[in-house]
Amino acid sequence: MTEQSILGEMLDRMIEQDADMKAEVTQGVGCGTSNIQPGMEKGEFDLYSEYTGTGWNMVMKKDGRYSEDLFKDMQKEYKEKLSGIISDQDMAQMNYAV
Image (cartoon, rainbow, N blue to C red; front, side, top):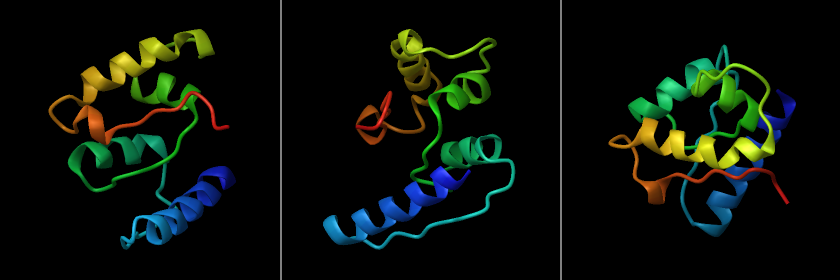
């Protein structure tokens, strides 16, 4: 999606400018979340943006439409799914960007 490409470039610039760290952006990962999420779990990717509905359906394997009232459940399940892989301090989820 175009939005993820733009967000990736924005995050790259923010990290390099504000955190004084080198960032490497990987574009064009085929199949999106279905490839990126396993890569995150293996430590191949450190950061990516996705729609909360995509996380709900693709990562959490939930049926039905995502709605904002499900966000706390989704956050809890992400932490359970990724415990032992990344620490709570290393993971951030936002329901929406402001």
